[in-house]
Amino acid sequence: MGMISEFKAFAMKGNVVDLAIGVIIGGAFGKIVSSFIEDVITPLLLKPALQAAHLSKIEELTAFGGVKYGLFLSSVINFIIVAFVLFMLIKGINAAKKKEAAAPAAPAGPTQEQLLAEIRDLLKK
Image 1: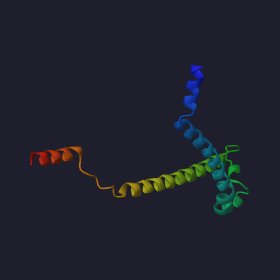
Image 2 (image 1 turned 90 degrees about the vertical axis):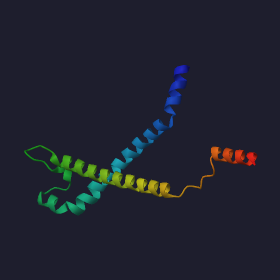
Image 3 (image 1 turned 45 degrees about the vertical axis):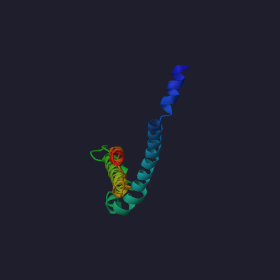
Image 4 (image 1 turned 180 degrees about the vertical axis):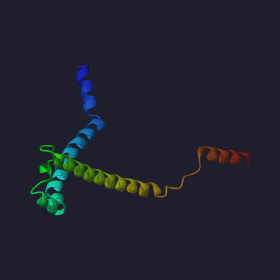
């Protein structure tokens, strides 16, 4: 039973649960980015180039009879979008932390040593 309880303690740690949630959300976010590329970016920005190449999707681009560089281009675009979104997210979090840190702290009262010195001085009088 010791091993089971150790595993339960490990699996229920905040870091493990947070990581699992992050992986699940990351997978879902990846699908959103892929859809954004295929359904928004490609039709809007790349449509003229794809029509000139007689293609409907960037993934269909090939060279030298079979090298699918369109898949690579699609992956690069996905990465750039994900990196930019994460950059903006972290930038927002850091700005919120700076505002939090800039808030004035409550005025600190006298230290224990100062209070003891005052008591000593009062007792001397």
